[in-house]
Image (tube, rainbow, N blue to C red; front, side, top):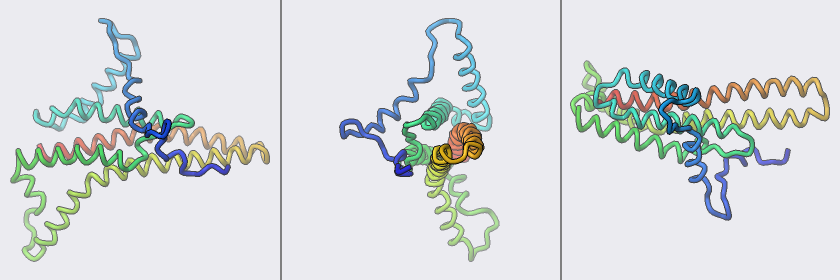
Length: 226
């Protein structure tokens, strides 16, 4: 009960050295690969899910946009596995760190925007000034559209960080309440524990949904610039 509420969000260290890099590299090791001609059911299901996700995200893209398919599929797998591993007890979730999410969002957003300015500079500049804008409002709209463009990577990172952090905090609070009530009132403990189980199921869904939302928004930014 005396544990710091935000202790699970502190980057772990091993012998005084930051272990966040090792934790970040761990999720890809959980993705099974096959060396045989005929795959087992797990790998077949994994390949089916990857094809389904990539087909849904790449359906709106042209040929140039589809060159990003491998990167986007790798991104959604990485975020999903990282979020799910963070639900394990005494584990660390890298996606609760705003710095890491910004490190993912800014390069992807910048790459999409730079591609748009290189290939379709007229369409890219046209987004700053909607057609039919009254002349007195032109300077203000250009400033607003510029700010909205620059804030996109921040919105991506903050959305992922806030959703994952809020779920972890809520699970921590309800888990602490369950332990506290276990010695006071057993029926109340069972009710709170049931709520905790339902919240855990919800957090599993949120972990997968947030990975999909993050990747889908990057895909939409790419679609607007290709």
